[in-house]
Image 1 (cartoon, rainbow, N blue to C red):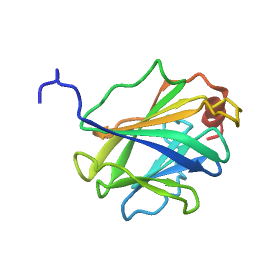
Image 2 (image 1 turned 90 degrees about the vertical axis):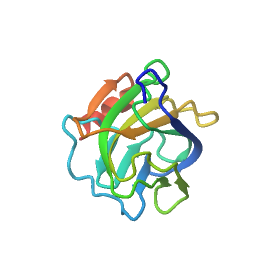
Image 3 (image 1 turned 180 degrees about the vertical axis):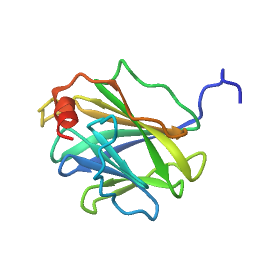
Length: 170
């Protein structure tokens, strides 16, 4: 494949129920990680363990809009559309993942990972995390996933006070 070609991306848009400001990315057959180790450098709103990731959202409980894009290579960050953006490496033992609501809620099956089991990069975009509008929430969460060798976590963009809270609480 030439580098001039656009990445192949499968997108899934979801309404995800949130409790305790958490959503989980889970690999088939894995259980929720313990997330004891803080990534270095810390990225605040996402923590990973083999086969699982903890994603922090703004509201403590609500239904939030979540978009997940699974790509065959880096699809590029949406730097203009989101306030906070972080990246971290993730190990998938099966290559089959889902987004799960906290406490045994709905499981949202995601497209299979393009390289099967292996190491992937997660890029987590957040918009409206500081808003407290319960009638029409303005928050949106966008997770991109693509195969990539492990590398250090990175904060690409940080503008909200909620992000700073989570970054400093690690």
